[in-house]
Amino acid sequence: MGFVYALIAAGLSLIFGLMEIVNFAHGEFLMLAMFTTFWAWALWKLDPFVSLPLTVGLLFLFGLAVYHGLIRWILGAPMLAQIFATFGLAIFLRAAAQALWGVDFRVIKNPLVDGRLAVGGLFIGLPQLTASLGALLAFGFLHWFIARTETGLALQATAQDRQAASLMGIDTQRMFALGWGIGAACVGAAGALLAMFFYVFPDVGSTFALLAYVTVALGGFGNVPATLAAGVIVGVVEVLAGLLIAPAFKYAVVFALYLVVVLWRPQGLFGRF
Amino acid sequence: MGRGLRWGAAAAALVLLIVFPQVVTQPFPRHVMISIFLYAMLAQAWNLLAGYCGQISLSHAVFFGTGAYTSTLLARHLGLSPWGGMLAGAVVAVLLSQCIGYPVFRLRGHYFAIATIAVGEIVGTLMINWDWAGGARGLFVPIKRPDSWMNFQFHESKQNYYYIALALLLLALWVTRRVERSRLGYYLRAIREDQDAAASLGIPVAGYKQRAMALSAGLTALGGSFYAQYIFFIDPESVFPTSLSILICLVAVLGGVGTFWGPLVGAAILIPLGEWTRIAFGGTGKAADLLVYGALIMLVSVIQPGGIMALAMRGRRRTG
View 1: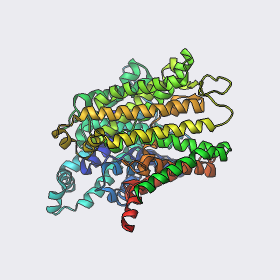
View 2 (view 1 turned 45 degrees about the vertical axis):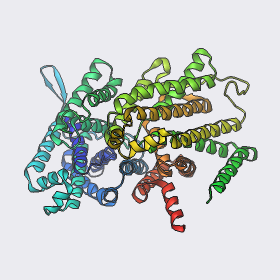
View 3 (view 1 turned 135 degrees about the horizontal axis):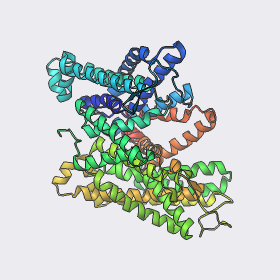
View 4 (view 1 turned 90 degrees about the vertical axis):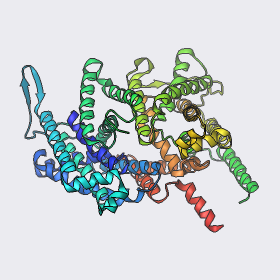
C-alpha cells in the first residue's frame, strides 16, 4: 500500500514543487482514474492491466485540461483563492461522479491477477503485490523522467526559479501544464492499480487524498524521492497501528504521527526549508 | 452612502428580521432563516481567524462538535441546563483550541491548512469510537416538557429558536466589530499581511494567533450547542465532519473573506440556494446542490477571490 500512497502523493508533490499550489482535488483525480478503469472493464471487458495506459493517458489529458481551464487563471491569486479553486473542483467532480454513476460501491470481478501468494506462512494478496510493484515501477519511471531527460530538467529549473527559467528560453506555461499532466498521470496509474482490489465509488478519493497530503507533507513538499520514503512510512505505520491498536484508529494514528513530525520538523522529514 | 444612512439601513433590516417570525408562521421559511443565521455566525467565527488573521483552518467542525457534545453530555449526565452547557462547551472549545493551536500554529500556509484537516480527522475518528459519548450511534438530547426558556427546548414552534439564532449572529457580529476596531484587530491583520514583518515590529505572533483561535473556537462552540438543542440529535457524522468545516469556509469565502458583512452575505445566498437545489433535485440522489456549490466556488475564486463583498466594493467605487 505504501508504494501506491507514494505514487498518489508524488503527483501532488510534483505540482506543489512546481508552482506552490496544493491540488485539493487530487483525491477526485484518483476517483476518476478508478472509474475509468472500472468502466473500461465493465463496458469493454478490458482488464485493469490492459486499460492502464488508457487511464494514464486520459488522466494526463485531464490534468492539462484542468490546468488550462482553471489553474492558469489563479496563478497570481492569493493562497485562499488557490485553495478554494481546487476545493471547488473537488466538490464539483465528486458531485458530478455521483450524478452520473450513483453512489454504489463497485468492484472489478475476476481480474487477470487474483489470489494470493504464500511465502513461509505469510499470505500476500497478488493484486496488492502487483500494485506495489507497478507503483514502484511507475515511480522509477517518473524519477528517470525528471532527473534524466531534458524536459524533466526544464521542469526542475522552472520549480527552482520561474523567472530565470523563462529567461533561459523555457516556456514556463508549458512546463506548468506538463506538471499538471504528469501529476494527474501518476494518479491515473495509481488509480488503475488500486481499482484491481479496491471498491470504486465517488467518495473514494477523500481518504486517499488525505493520506497523500500527509505523505507529501511528511516527506517535504516538492521533494519527489522523499515522497517515496514517506509513502512507505505511512503504509507501514497504518498497518502496524491497525494490528497493534485497533483497525478503527489506523488513520488517526497516521495523522497523529504526521502532527508529531511537523511539530518537530515543520519542513517535513526530508525537507530542506 | 453616508454613515448615518448605513446604520439606518442596518437598523431597519434588524427590525424587519425581528418582525419576520410574527408575520411568517410556516415552519420552513423560519427554518431557512435559522439556518442562515447559524451559518452566518459560524462563518463569521471562522472569518475572525482565517479572514482577519490569515490562518486558514479547515477543522472548525471540531469546535462545533465540541459545543454540541459538551452541552448534550452535561444535560444527559448531570441534568445541567443547556444554557450552562453552552457556556461550558465554549470553555472546553477554547481550551481545546489552545491545545490544537500550539502545534499547528508553528506551520504556515498550505502546511497549516493540511495540519488542521489532519486534526479534524483525528478528532472525528476518536468521537466515532468513544462509546461513552455515544460512539457512532450518536446522542439524543433528553426531551423535557413543557417548552421553556429554562430548558432551551421548544417543541411547539420555531419562533424562539429563531430569536436565539438571531441573537447568536448579533453576538458574533458584535465580537467581530469589537475585534476589528481594537489593537487585536490591527495586530491580526498585520500578521495576515506579513507574519515576519509583524514579528519584527514586536507583535507576539504566536500569542495573538492563539487569541484569534480562542475567540473563533468559542463562538463556533456556541453555534454547536444551539444546533444540538435545535435538532435534538447529534452524532459524529453530523457535527464533526470535514465537510461541515468546508461548508463554513465556503460561506465566508463566497461572501468575502476578511470583511465584516461577507459571512452574512455568503450565508444569505448559499443556504437558500442549497435548500432550493435540495428541494428541486433532492431525492434523486444526484447531489445537484454540491454540483452547484462546486461550480460557484470555482467561479468566485477565478473571477473575484475577494468574494461578493469585493465585487460590491468595486461597483461602488466605479459609480463614485
